[in-house]
Length: 192
Ligand code: HEC
Ligand code: HEC
Ligand code: HEC
Ligand code: HEC
Ligand code: HEC
Image 1 (cartoon, rainbow, N blue to C red):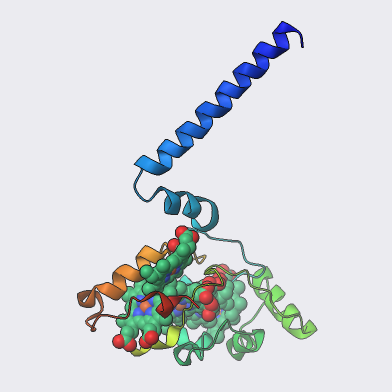
Image 2 (cartoon, rainbow, N blue to C red; image 1 turned 180 degrees about the horizontal axis):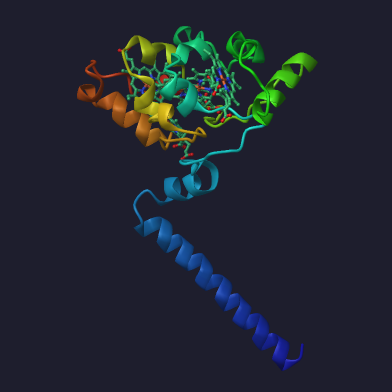
């Protein structure tokens, strides 16, 4: 092996060793480092605000027009999953609202007439190994905004809470936050 490439590979080896040592030190010294990095890669979704295929605005409907959350998210208080409204629910009102010169409303009505279902992009999405149900929370009197923020002021929905394990567990521990007795914090409460 010529001298030059040997010294290059020694240098590369030293660099690799340094990287391993630094990484090990990082996980040893920084508190909670593993959770922080795994959150960084898998779950740093706070503020996530995807574009939606069809225009819909909570500020206008739930805010200005004061349409109740459960009018469109019916069944969520009984624990139904994935409760987003179909276009039939929109058409309860929009069948009677003029669409002239309103391209967004034209699109809504034409999708409805064609029978095209809307594939809304999911905003909140817990990992599959987490057990969560709206039913117990709403029954305990926790309001939507405690976990979703001021939805009635949002033009486009965003993930307002971090949805990390710490966020769930802190509230379960803190009875004063909910005015309820401590919610359970054993691992099996939230993990299958
Ligand atoms: C007129 C119907 C309507 C009303 C009223 C309504 N919503 Fe929605 N909501 C929707 C639609 C449609 C979507 C899916 C599109 C989007 O994300 O904007 C949605 C999405 C959401 C999402 C995000 C779901 C996800 O993908 O994770 C949350 C949270 C939510 N609504 C909460 C509320 C709350 C809280 C209220 C009351 C303050 C409310 N909504 C009132 C129609 C409605
Ligand atoms: C309870 C009645 C009601 C329901 C249900 C409802 N809307 Fe509306 N929507 C309205 C009213 C009222 C307006 C304002 C109309 C106007 O400005 O003339 C409106 C306006 C809109 C606009 C126009 C916004 C703009 O900036 O031009 C869109 C788009 C829209 N709605 C989409 C939806 C969708 C999608 C759904 C179903 C998820 C829905 N609406 C359900 C009452 C409703
Ligand atoms: C204790 C916190 C909490 C409260 C209170 C809460 N939500 Fe949620 N919501 C969540 C979490 C966490 C998710 C994500 C669930 C998942 O990914 O499995 C979610 C998801 C949703 C979704 C997406 C569809 C679904 O079922 O996954 C909608 C719509 C929604 N919430 C609406 C509401 C409305 C409306 C209220 C009030 C009536 C409400 N939420 C109250 C935490 C909460
Ligand atoms: C704002 C406070 C709050 C937050 C945030 C919260 N919870 Fe809860 N949780 C409660 C309360 C209050 C109860 C009801 C306890 C009772 O019935 O006495 C509950 C009950 C539950 C239950 C049912 C427990 C049982 O066996 O009765 C599960 C499961 C659960 N929560 C999971 C979660 C998960 C997962 C998250 C995070 C994604 C979460 N919670 C976030 C307050 C909260
Ligand atoms: C109140 C609900 C709740 C309880 C109780 C709970 N967890 Fe979690 N856990 C979550 C949620 C939500 C996530 C996903 C979000 C995240 O990774 O922070 C999670 C993620 C995890 C992860 C994945 C690590 C990561 O950072 O991605 C592990 C491992 C875990 N939990 C173990 C446990 C153990 C062990 C216990 C009991 C000491 C426990 N959990 C109790 C809600 C809970």
